[in-house]
Amino acid sequence: MKKFSTTSSAEIMALIRTLGYKENGETIRTEDYMAEVFLSKFMRFILSFSVIRSLILAIYAIKLPGGLPFIMAKSRAIDDMLLQTLNDREKPEQLIILGAGYDTRTYRFRDKLTNIKCFEIDHPEMIARKRSAMQQITNDASYKVDDKNYVHYCGADFNGKDNFDLAWLVSQGVDKGKKTVFIIDGVSYFLQADAFKNLLAVIALFPENTQVVFDYVYADIFTGGIYRGSEAFKSSLQKMGEPVSYGINQQELMITMKTLGFELTELMSPKQLEWRYLTKPTGESVQPYGFLNIAMLRKKSAGYILK
Image (cartoon, rainbow, N blue to C red; front, side, top):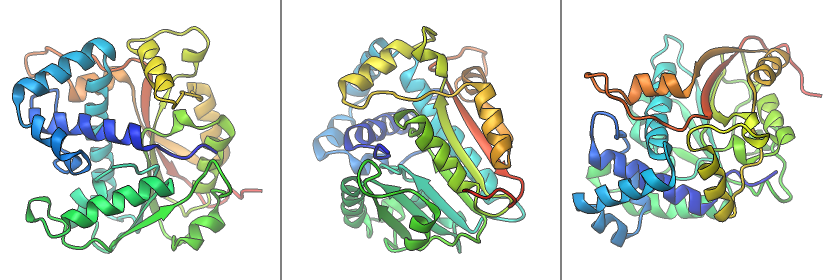
C-alpha cells in the first residue's frame, strides 16, 4: 500500500489552508488558524503581506482551476462533519485520522474532544515532522496547545513491510470495541482500489455507529472524463511524484457500502460544496474542482466479518 501522504503534499495543503485563514473572505477562507505552524519562518513572513497572498491565489487560480476553492471548502466541510459527530447525543469514543499529514483538527477542537482518544496515522517521516512542529508550539498560548501527549502518533510505511489491519491498530492502542470517527482526507486517490477497500473493511469491524468521512475523485477521470480542474489536478500531482491512482463511481460506492454494512449519511458533490461554502449572500459564487465528492458513512451493524 502506498504511504498515506508525503511531506510535499502536506506542506502545500498547509499553505492553502493558511491562505484561507488569513484571507478570511466570504468564500475563499478556512478556519485553520494553526496550519501556518507547519510552514517555514520565511513563508510565514511573506504570507503576512496581503499583496503576496493575492499573487499566490492568482497563480493557483490559473494553474489549478477550482483547486484552492475546493481545498478551502473541503476543510470547512470536514470540520463541520466532525463537529456534527461530536455534538451528537452519543459522542464517539475515539477519533482516528488516517494519512493525517499536517491536519490540525485534534488540536483545534481539543475542547470538544475531552475524553475522546485521538490517533494520527501516517508515514514515519511525516509523523516525525509533525511531532517536531507540535512540540515547538506546545506552550504557545496563541495556538491553545497545552498538552502534546493526548494525541497518539502512529507511524507506519504502508508501502513497505507494515499491514493496515485491525491487529495493527490494536497494537497502536486503538480500542476495537469503541465507537470511532475516522477521517481520511486527501488519501483515497493515492491508493490502489484493493487498498482503499481494505481500509473500509477494517473500519467496518468497529462497533455500530462508527463513522468515516473521506473524499474521492470520480473514476471516469481515468477514462476520458473531463471536469473543471481534473487534467491540471492529475498533471500537477504526477509532477510532484504523487500520481493519482484510484477513483470511485457512485454505483461502486453503494455496492461497497452495502457489502460492509455502512449507510451513506451525507454525500457532498462539487455543486453542493459550492452552494454551501463558496457562495456569497448576493448569489455570486466561486467554482471548486468538479470531480471530487465528500462522503460520510455510518456503520449500521457489527455483523460484517472480515475474512
